[in-house]
Image 1 (cartoon, rainbow, N blue to C red):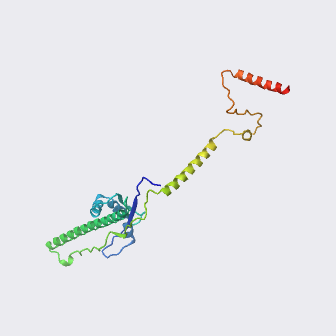
Image 2 (cartoon, helix red, strand yellow; image 1 turned 90 degrees about the horizontal axis):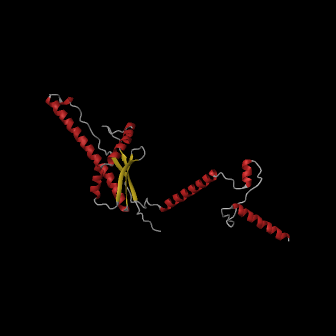
Image 3 (tube, one colour; image 1 turned 45 degrees about the vertical axis):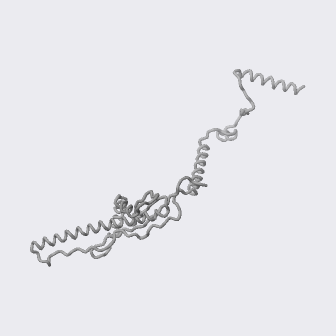
Length: 248
């Protein structure tokens, strides 16, 4: 059996948002909670054009790549860099490229912030010197621990099978839905039906005896014409003749 829909593959790289460290290099519970909050912002940054351009420059021409995106794993400090496409070997490559692109972008932003803080500190020192303040009264230069805001803890691997289409799963879902729909229709018709199907059922419903029933005419009996009285009379004569012939 062949399917017209081309297979789609998906691969994900797992990243962890590191807790921000203070000048002593220690991490507190509040720092961990802050990392979880930052994961939301970093995931949004990963879905921007900046990361896409960086990843695209590293990947070059990639065939059949449909979509790459970042998402937070629940409310934790973990992120998924996921790519989908029609080429098995390239979705993992693309997911890793996007993870590295986000990592390097955050490093560049952090380096820029540290450079700006260092420049402001040096300007402050020059101002104090110009004012004749002794060097012993200068503020201590801040120390910025070297760490990455995002670490890749599990690189994407080449998927072993396609995630779509899945004919077996689709067939199973169709069978279950078909059974549920048919059972539901049968139950609905059974409860909506307000006719009595037999004299016994009518007697049970009304709790009254059935005095007489009118049989349903079969398809072989046709009552056609504009004079029903003639048909009744002809039928009566036919029955009377049959009885007379039988008596003779």
